[in-house]
Image 1 (cartoon, rainbow, N blue to C red):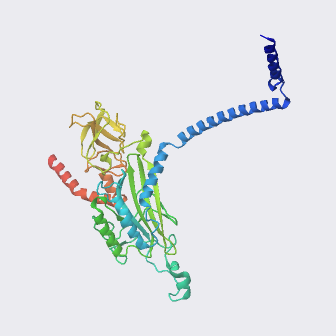
Image 2: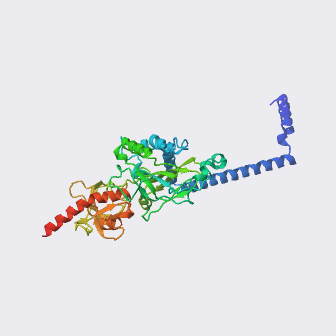
Image 3: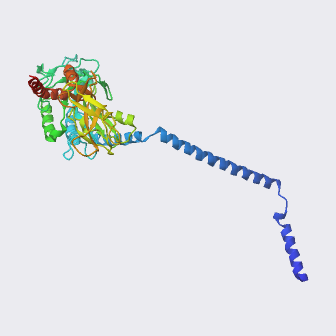
Length: 445
């Protein structure tokens, strides 16, 4: 290395030694470095705690808001969207008929799938009905009809009957509110034009909550029949309107029905309440009550398909397809205490073995179907009466199913506690019961 090169190297070294990197740190620089280190530590702790809290909230939401609540919310929104259109436009009694014809009847009369709501798998349980709660035809103390106070200040609101203060009407009428009749029910509910007051004689009491008052399950009932077609309901509604079924004595009109959706296993009680205010203005309200079926809560299942045998009010033994074939051996013998039907059963309960999508609506005796070689079908033999606890088969001559199993002797003893359609069904069965008993006596003699 030459002298010039050595000189240039020394000059570079002097410049480097004179730079900031070779000088000791100042006090403010040390303070800034410590501050930045503390900020990094705090940022790491904050990020870690935020992620931990996020995970904790996620687990909390998973346990606090299960899928049942989500299904209830979406199902309620769907049902509300179907029954709410044009509901806010009803402010007079005459407009109730318009809403029922234009909005309600298209929902319960489905030509493609009768007894199902349109564009859904929501099945209508039982018969939809419209009932009226009204005041008794007593005279109200009003001001003189030609006085200034009555015409411009008090007017009609003072003369209207008030719910909870005046006497409710409970009489039966023959097609008009001026003709009282002693008839309590009709064998042909779809063709009877009278006004029958239906009382609540069952142990299942519920209430309808409106904007102004709370109403019980009683009232003058008008049933709809989804399987008979929309034209029949329209004709009957026109006749009801012509007979002035709604007038100034009407307190409330409640349109109600119950649906069941097997896809989400939800029942939904739907009540559309039209209340008459003190000023003569109608206040409508749609009240929905979704509820998971009791069978699903017991089984913990997300999808439950109700069997057809329990929905028909006491149909005969029917075959149901099970999920997995399995050879079943008899575990005991079932005997009906009314008709002496005897058969071996393989299971007793609500959820037969090896089934995931079927939960029966009652605890019943089940046997393998002996009339088919398929191992994945079974028959429902019978159950116990919920009142007297006797063993009865599901034949129409021995029992019926209405939320619970009832033997026909108990039904006949408490016939007035059942709805009108059940009473009519029992009246139709009486000739069959008599002939059935006659055949039994003939065979004994």
